[in-house]
Image (cartoon, rainbow, N blue to C red; front, top):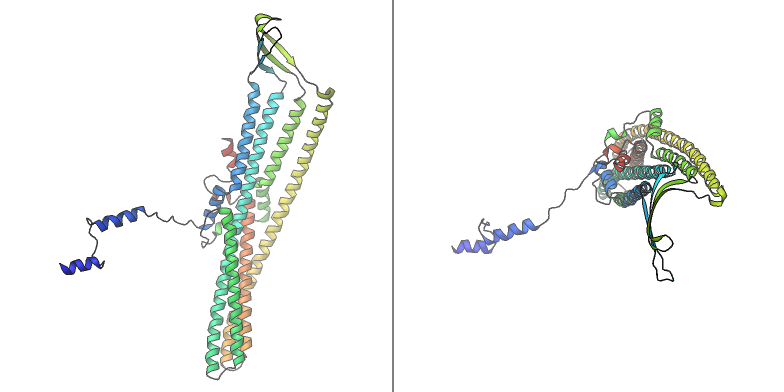
Length: 436
């Protein structure tokens, strides 16, 4: 019994289900929050950006405001009610109440509603363009992190190789088979490799912070980008897709529709309105004690003898010509962007193959130089220079691979190919979701 009590005091006795210590431990385990699983991959990054970026909330509020403006325009079809109370020197307080129901406005109300609805569509496509922009920035930031990680691997491999060379030459110097200058040279190259690795580590932290500013939450970036996202058609098909799916072109097209609606609205603005009007007068000496009148009224306002409406109509037609020209310029800019990105992507593919061949060849040459150095046929400096050349080729290969990935993702984002992995509410469906 004494031995058992001693084990309990020393904490060696297992907790029984009915013991107080077991109950306390259970309460502590239940009250401790579990760490949420960290999301990973470019898909998670895009979904986080589209769900949490603050700029999207502001643009959605703009769409909502345009929807309320449409409700206000539609409310002009309903009756309006006004009241008036006057104070007279006879201590009489006449009251007048008027209700007016528009019967016919010659298209003025309908054109105002059409303009408000089109304006809402413009804001919806502006939201789509913002989402496409954020998708592009997020995909590029994720790809850049992938590239920095690859270069960090190369830097670590270079540091490890130079450290092994330094240890080798240090042992040879201790055995009087190498000079002190060779040892100092190897150490200098090792320090340079360590400094380069630290710079890449710092660059990785910067790129991760840039991605965090977009996603607003931590996303694991170790997962590679799927090949299906970078498998793109030829340049002609990409141009056709861009003409149909480009958010900039769709926005300019909606701006043309808005300008046309503005022309119709300004054209019908001077038109009269026919009202069904009811007036009720109470305590009015001029009209009697009380009176109720119903009639049809026609009301028109010709501001500035019609010249003000003429000027606004000309301005609306000028804006229509402007947005038509803007659409042509945007189509040309999209074609230029597709050509530029596709050409750069194709060039990087050729560069990748060239650097890959160079890396394979230099790896064999480095092994040959190391054997020749040990046989006394090559100086130590050539071995270190070959290691540096091999490392530079690996860095350039990694950079070319990453630039090819960036160009591929930018093309995919431009034609809307990344919308499908952006979550439940994709960018392409934003207009439909908002209208519903």
